[in-house]
Length: 520
Image 1 (tube, rainbow, N blue to C red):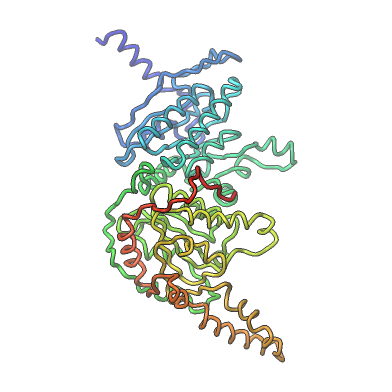
Image 2 (image 1 turned 120 degrees about the vertical axis):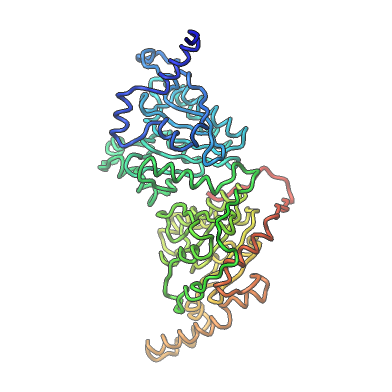
C-alpha cells in the first residue's frame, strides 16, 4: 500500500487531470477538445512534462474562494513535437471559461520564460473568455506580462498561436504579437469588442463569426494566417509549420531528405508564361514545379492573393517563397500584399530562412483608395524588409518587373545575392504601352483614326519592349546575374543556395544604432 503522502499526490494529480466531467461534456458538445486532449494530439506520446499543475488562484472576492481548480484554467509544460522540443500552453475552457487571472497568467509567463531559456518554440492553444473580471487589475497585470513576454520572445523563438474558441478584448493581442495565428473555422472567433458593443455603438447587426470568425480574419483583416476545419486539423497544421522552422534564431532550419532530384528540370516551365503579356497564369504552378515536390506550405493563402508567401524545401533545405500572382489583380502590389510580403520576409530573416522571390508585377496599384489608405508607407515596408534581410536572397524575374515594384521585389539594388531572369522578363520604368504613350506622343497625335493610333501604339510598344524592356539590358549592367531558360530554374536556385549556405551578415552600420524604424 502506498504511503499516505504518495496517495494524496496521486489523488491530486487525478483531480487535476480529470477535471469537471460536466464541463468537459459541454466542451465536446461545442465541437471542441479539452486542453489536455489537444496536448495529447500535439506532442509525441509520453514526452509531455507538465509543470505548475497545482497552482490555484488566490482571489476571494465575488465567491472566488468557492471557485477553485488545480491549474487555474491553463495547462503548461514542454514536450517533443515530431521529435523536436517545444513549450506548450493550452487554456482550459472547462474552468471559468479559460478566463485569465493573476496565477493563470503567471503560469503562461513562466512557460514562455522556459522557452526563451531553452531556445525552443512556443505553441499557445487559446480558448478563453478573456480577462477574469472577478480579479480586476490583477488580470490586467497578467495580460500585460504575457504581452511583454511575447515581445521578448519575438525573433528569438518561433511563436505559434492556435485560436480554438473565443478570444476577445485584450486577449487578442497575445496572438497578434506572435508569428503565426491559426483559427478553427466553426469554433473560434476573435475581436476587440463583441457584437453587443458593436450593436450599441454603431447599430450594426453582427454575430461572433461574422464579426471575428476565422474566415473573416483569413480573408479581410489578415489576422489569421491559416484556417483549420477543427481542433485536430489545427494541430496538424501546427506540426507541419514547425517542421519548416528552426528551434530558435541561432539555428539553421532543419534539412529533410525529400528524395527529389536537385537537378530536375521541368519543360512545362518553358511554356507556362503566355506569349501575350496581357494574359494571366497562376504563379502557384511555377512554385510547385520548382520546389521539392509536395513541400510548398502556403501562409495566408486567402488574404491579398495577388501575393504568395509560404515555406518550401529546395534539395531538403527550408526556404521562404515570396511571389507575385498575376492570376489575381495582375499581381500588383497594394496595401495588403505589401504588409503580407514585408512581415513574411522579416520573419524569414529573423530565423535564418533563405528567401526565394518570383517576380511578375506591373507595379503598385493606383487609385484614390490606395493612396488615401497609405500605399506609400505600406509599400515602403517591402523596401525596408528586403534591404534589412541578411539571409540568402535569390530572385527570379519571370515576366513583368516595372517601376518601384521591380526595385521592391528583391532586386539587386536592395541587396539580393543572386538575380536571374527568364527570357520573358520585362524590366523597365513602366509597361511598354505606357512608355510608348509618352515617348512617341507627338507621332501618336498625328494618327488620322483611332484604329491607326492603336496600330501605331502597338508598334511603338513593341519597339520599346525590344530596345528597353527586356532582361538583356539589365544583364548588360550587371543588375541580374544571368538570363536562364525556365526549365533550368530549379537546379539554378539549388546551386545558388548551396553556394550561399555559408553566407554571414557582414553589413555594418556606419553609426552604431539600437535598431531601425520601419514604416508603419
